[in-house]
Amino acid sequence: MKFTLSPLPYAYDFLEPIIDAKTMEIHYSKHHQAYVNNLNAALEKYPQLPEHSIEALLTNLEKLPTDIQAAVRNNGGGHFNHTMFWSLLTSEKTFTAPSKLLLEKIIRDFGSLDAMKEQFINAAKTRFGSGWAWVIVDTTGKLKITSTANQDVPFKEGKPILGLDVWEHAYYLNYQNRRPDYITNFFKIINWKKVEANLR
Image (tube, rainbow, N blue to C red; front, top):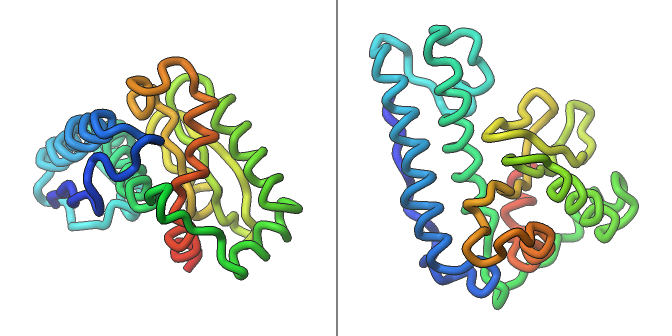
């Protein structure tokens, strides 16, 4: 198994002013690349392991050799989370709104889009230290807000369809300690078409 860093679907400055070009460059080419490198280094210790998707690895950690489980959890999670994150972002100039189908599901499970935003923002703001805020489809088919520490992926709770990185390296150059501003601005650059595609 050897995982690779897929090209970004846009230039580093595409998300400005919400996410600045320098943050994007460092976040993608340094942090995400490090997760990929460290994941591959862990897996290279056991070349006899069968090939698996990143999702399969993360949902079957207990089947891996014990000495690489933590490395795969942390770095594999970092790779999965960031790959999804990049795909969820679009320019403020090409803003997309939730489709009728997605909006109906949001209203069904949260009452309104504003109520969903409020819950999500609160989950992201109150995640202590480093981690992620998520919208998932739980095991009953309902949309739910949750958050995870570090690079954990909420697969045990359901299927993630929208995630926000709240590690400081994701926003500190531009926002410093103003995490709430970064979280609120995130809603200006969500690619809702991709969120809906993740429902499938």
